[in-house]
Length: 62
Image 1 (cartoon, helix red, strand yellow):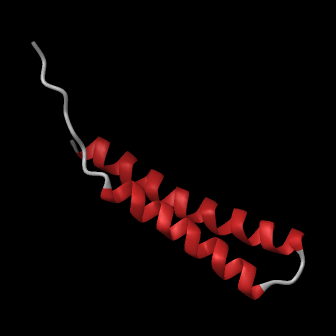
Image 2 (tube, one colour):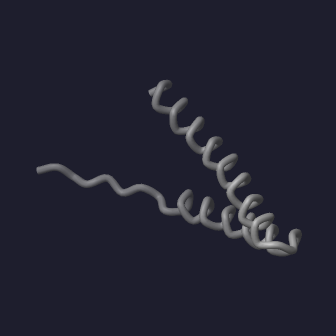
Image 3 (cartoon, rainbow, N blue to C red):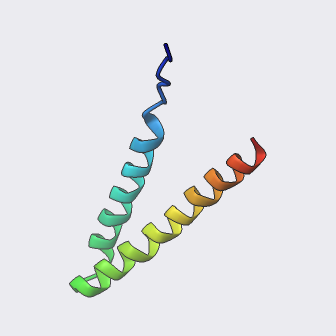
């Protein structure tokens, strides 16, 4: 019988909160919809890159 691993949920909610702050900041900073979506996409991609590098490096170190 195997035991299922449980992972903490706070990293998921931290990333979700960061993306929400990016969206709220974009809505406050720009006037037109294309600028808002471009800003959200750009900064979400940068955040995703940092998460990817962290996970990739931790897998290699393990």
